[in-house]
Structures are given as structure tokens and as C-alpha cells.
Image (cartoon, rainbow, N blue to C red):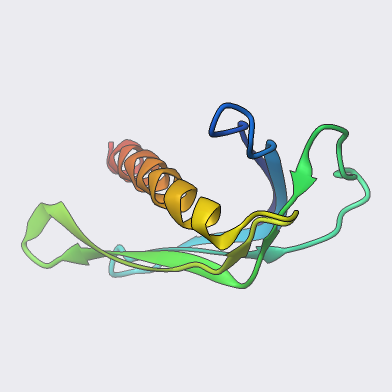
Length: 118
């Protein structure tokens, strides 16, 4: 269990301000090899809001990486996220920005799972 501060850079030629998120995160591996990462927003005295960042809010979220029996190079992924980016962004802007952000997340998740298997 840890407290993590994550940041995102500005986007759309700085129309979207950089964001920061502070979450308490649980990472657990089960006996069958399933890995869980679960998180939710938290306020923490060592992570006060930073200037030039808009504070976002993650509702309870997470993902399960579930191994395929007999196929060590395959993993089933079950994820659930609900994020409030904060600020006054039109929904059309959020809809056009968020898919690229999620794609980056899954790319990083793939790298992390491969590194854990080594």
C-alpha cells in the first residue's frame, strides 16, 4: 500500500492545464498469479496541491491482470476507472483528450507487467 502522486502534462497546445492526482494504491499478487492494483483519491499532508497543476480526482478504480492458464505470455485485463479531471473543461475536449491518455496508460501497464514477470 502506498500513496502516489501522478501528474499529466498540459495538452492541446496548453489549452488543458497539467493535472495531478493523489491516490492511495494497493498492489497485490494472488497465489494463482493474478495481480490487482486498486486505488482511490486521498488527501495527504505530504502531497498538497501544487501551483500550476489542476487537482484531479480518481474515484475507486483499479485493474486485474489475470494469467491465461497454460499461456504464460497472455494476460486477461479487467479494468475500471472513473476520473474527474477537475477544472472547467467542455465535455467535448475531455472526450477527445482522454482516449489518448488511456492508451498511454495501457502501454505503460503492459511494460510494467512484463517487467514483473522477469
